[in-house]
Length: 486
Ligand SMILES: Nc1nc2c(c(=O)[nH]1)N[C@H]1C(S)=C(S)[C@@H](COP(=O)(O)O)O[C@H]1N2
Ligand SMILES: [Mo]
Image (cartoon, rainbow, N blue to C red; front, side, top):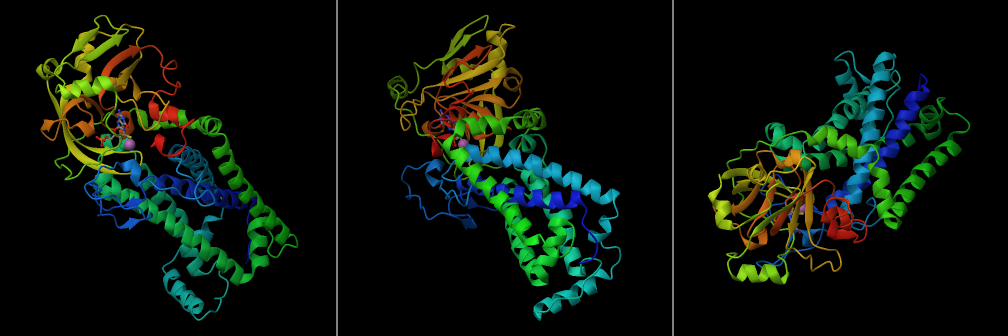
């Protein structure tokens, strides 16, 4: 191969490989939370085009979406074993590094003469790529180009300028915050599940490319080509030890990432949040949902089983006539609102797409009262910053984990599609979906939308609640590994 690869290019190439191993593995961990891919946003059970688990859900029997989750082994997924939360933390931290490396690489490519290696400047490239393909098919090696042959050039340009942006766009399209505000996921990709399927196919393409790419390097002459891309000189004498050391580092980083995550989940989570939590908030928190779909899913999954709490059961037996929504904390007027009183308030109705962090989606129409209506009546004190949602959900399947709760800030609380819903698809809210009252927080992931509400409390800080993470599912990540965090 002619021409030297400058140091920045060799570093970017190496980091890209390291990051891709971590992205693929953490991506698989995320997929394991709902190992099914669809082309439709009803995500109707049975309509998946790919299913990566052998589990079948008993027909008619009571099962929840958490039962559908699977676990991938730790050598394959990061960290492995069904840790969706940690998988996501890894994915988002590494994607930041990957995108940054990619941006630096593309800028350097354009300001140096190096871009001419990748970007074809004449249509001649097409017939020549065809010739190269034919000679590979005859198990031959086409003559070197400058430095790549036309097929290599087209493939590399495709990976850098099509496949990488493809993964970034389909990844962004899965953000419920962006979906709630902009319609591009539906307009460009045709929905959340299509974006999710296409994101996965992007991963498959990247893995396939890497396998073929490495195979080709071996076929073209391992020492010659690896010397060029690793050490900047084709056939460099230190190629084999240098490449071995490079692979050893990638392996070590992967092993450390997995063992660190599994051994010290709480510390790992906090480490991976540095910088990323703020960036995520800045990128996604600001968008106000304004969804108006006109579709209801024939089947809407359930996540979280109805409470065993004795008070809630008694209230349910009495058809919630004695139930009250307690409004407490830093407010001028604490209140206790019955269902009839809530129904007498101005009604909000919205038909939206629910996005569970596990990966499934479903549409429904929700009716209830905007949280802002309640806030206008209870009048938060100036010190109040957050709204806590207390529930009757004792989480009996996870003993000692405390009651389910969630926290949102006042800005989110006042958004028009933040409602307390007592109706689903025109009827009373069914028990599995949170009767008598649940939160609907459109534009956010499903786990924030607390079901079986007991009361709301206005607070200045939430660190004294539960384990201080601002929600039951965030709390349990620290000490209940696996599916509780789903
Ligand atoms: N009290 C309570 N609320 C909850 C949950 C739960 O387990 N308990 N699960 C959350 C999750 S993860 C999701 S995806 C949605 C699911 O709502 P659905 O059961 O109506 O589909 O409820 C959220 N609210
Ligand atoms: Mo969820």
